Length: 289
Image 1 (cartoon, rainbow, N blue to C red):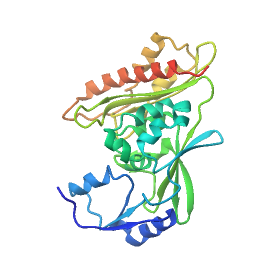
Image 2: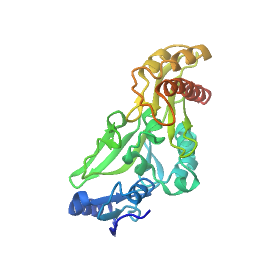
Image 3: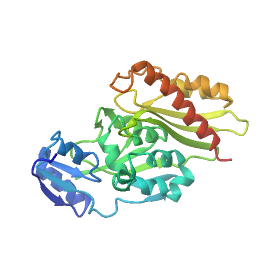
């Protein structure tokens, strides 16, 4: 399958890309890694007249420390996130997620910003970034702003970004001592996309009790969902296998999964409890002493 004819422009700066977006309006589309947009163009689900390539824009790649956050450039490819020493030191849950996205070609070409901005409900990164309490820096010609992850994913393939904004950075708080993170998923055997997934960030005090928890679930709604009942069940309690299992059993509460050709609603809800437990247990095992 071939896409419809289109023009191509390589932006040399974020400002130039923003100006091109204004110039071309709805007929222009931003191109990052291309692993979401190009397949849609081949299927004629999208037919932009102009592609605005961000790949030539400097300064949008890499992982760095900024105060108490890790800052990840939006054009950083999944493999570079997964192999980053900073990510592996501070955010093993993020390394988990980026190491199981698609296949090796996708991981070497796809970008963290492209995945986040696409907001596919079957993607890995929205789930783990929700668990990690990330925020997103977006820029327009009038300036930049930060959007918290809990406000960012608003619907199927929809975010809180405006049409004149570009995602430039992802900011993730560096967990304090006594905190661990993990990500686990049941992938679709053909595509590798999420059937159900879970991300967890768990803080434990020296006595063994949970002092804070963020647990996110993917595959049960229009985007990543906070498993609030699970978080509350863990709060202030010893992180024993029994407590973790009881908390994970509530992971699918207040969700509205949709049956599809691969999995039914009851199955998805059950799998959510299984993978929530896997993610929580792995996060607890990784708690930094």
